Amino acid sequence: MIQRIELNGPDDFHLHLRQGEQMAAVVLDAAKNSARALVMPNLKIPIRTTAEALAYKDAIVTQVPGTGFEPLMSLYLTDETPKEEVRVAKESGAIVAFKLYPQGATTHSSFGVTNLKGRYGVFEAMEKEGLVLCLHGEVTDPKVDIFDREKVFVDRLLAPLAQAFPGLKMVLEHVTTQEGVDFVVGGGANLAGTLTAHHLWINRNDLLVGGIKPHHYCLPVAKREEHRLALVKAATSGNPKFFLGSDSAPHSVGAKECASGCAGIYTGRHLLAYYAMAFEQAGKLEALADFAGKFGAQFYGLPVSDQKRVLVKKPESVPLDLDYGTEKLVPFRAGETLTWTLEA
Ligand SMILES: [Zn+2]
Image (cartoon, rainbow, N blue to C red; front, side, top):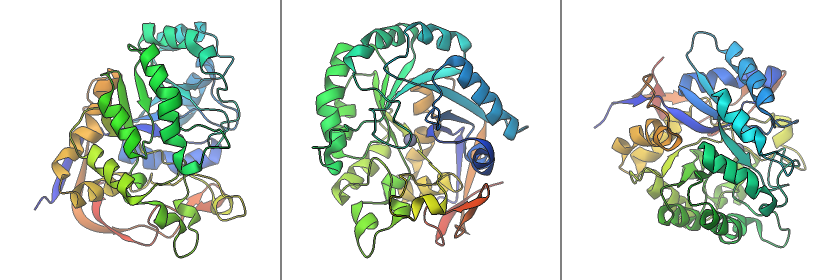
């Protein structure tokens, strides 16, 4: 039985780090679990320009001196993003992606894109510069059932986009459905998908059965068990189109446990242990290293990290809560005992 796993990197290609004292509360978890992370730009006031991204990167790096943690930056695409920004972003060397949120799809998405066709000039520029387009793959049409929003996004928006831009690298972020998996698998080499740890663990029953579980609420929302199984299969398949993107998204207890609770699950503290357990349960522990440390780097055109993280087979309890600035947050699987521990 495997007792020790050595991972290059790893790289987390989808992470929320917030700002100020909230960032200070979570960024060290990121630096412990990953060598590099693609930091999402959906702050209260989104990161829309290269200058803003560089300042945000500085603020992150300042919090974790001596760790070697490298934030990879992304810009928030809006209806107003000028195509000239793409070249500026590329030349900065710090920005690797633009993030597309359909307006209203999730946390802090009110600045998001309303007209995809209107963005085609920017996509052309990204294709030319080799920057990646990261997609929050859900439609926001109120007539579309929330459990179908990813599937409909793939049909209505992603399929035509992939056809129009066969050379544009695109990542369907946090895939949650069989249909999303199938589209990524069947697409060109320019198309990839990230998979979160929590979507490998929970289905919609974990959210809704036996009392509503606000700490299992995220977007895209967890789907049926058959979809969860499809995600586990994709993650552990060894297909280089799928790689690690945690979407670890901290919210205070108060923001989660209320009448209109925020979407987001905090997996940052024990991230690699959650993935290791999911891979182990699938009997595919040997597939973890490439998923976590190689495939994402390859897709983004980055060298595989020479940093290492080691997981050992040793029980570790997840605390009931963690400090989050002046508040608390509840981590994923709070109070439970995990079977893998990240070596200090
Ligand atoms: Zn996210």
